[in-house]
Length: 212
Image 1: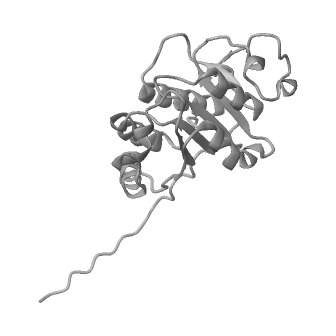
Image 2: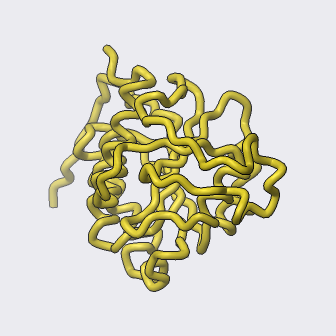
């Protein structure tokens, strides 16, 4: 029998991923498949999948949530983008669990933390365990448009996006207690895959990642 030998040479280095740590409220499995493909294509550093109060708990144990299945989906996104970096994946069963385990790593100097949500005013002090930690505990939470995000290229961005059922006021308050600022993309209720791709694309453009 004859042996076939193949040789590959790389002519371009892979692009370093943007320092985006995407926190995603666990969506429906069919949505997760599309989301991973699109966010990997756009570019992220890591993905944090978390259960939510309004989300379906069974999604966390779905076959697609297995590490091997997620890895294959990331590879599809890498192939589309012509890149080789596979984002790291972390999981949590609730927002409180997520912040208790990974909260310290979110406090790096120079990082930006954004909670993407509908323009739905709420009083964080009513559900916040430490209302004194809020700048204005007795006023409705103020949203800024995502286009005003002060993230700079090269720094870390923690971007939290809920599933279609959204975040509860308690979950919003937990994010605010951990230094997240609320940002909106209008009052339309978007599909999770639309919100994730749009928020990531807007953030990358604002930070200059699309400039040549």
